[in-house]
Length: 231
Ligand code: CA
Image 1 (tube, rainbow, N blue to C red):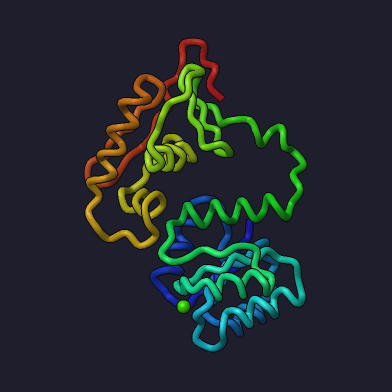
Image 2 (image 1 turned 45 degrees about the horizontal axis):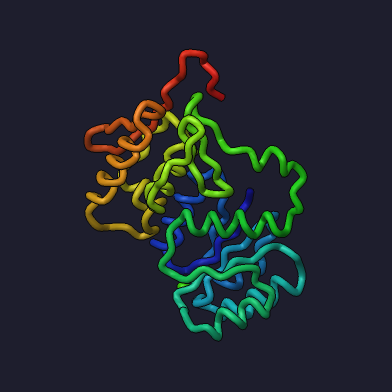
């Protein structure tokens, strides 16, 4: 999926670009309203900052909507309710306030895309993802089952598991994980990550292993069952 990211704040844009790319999105990044409007695309969704150097993002929103039905998600530091309402009235499909995490933005993109693209393969999409023969993650319902029993996870424990299971076996750095699960602009200590990893190890013991790679990060490994029923 191709994303047109319109954002003049470089750290925010870089962080979003990295995060989205990691999740398989292709990101075209522009820093002005003018560049957004002259971008020829194609793109599937627009992430639009309101505070742009050359023009008000709301005008960009209006102009984009005037010529296409492309989904537009406003990303803004303006928490003013008026901006939110005006943005939506001008045709934006959703609104995310800064600061936000990459996962939140991805969730909004997926939700918007689900609304605009009537699903064709609903049965397949409703099937929980299976990891080995013991663990399933239902990303739509945000529920996790171990041996058929629902596992009670704290919200961030679920987010962390959902992130690590996107790519089993891949080594994720602490920074990548913090950025994706906690905050797009995380610069602080990462002790909370260790606490959540410990909780997942305890709650999902035997089904998955979360390997620590010293000085780098973590890698989730799915434990294979004796019957090899993993998919
Ligand atoms: Ca800005």
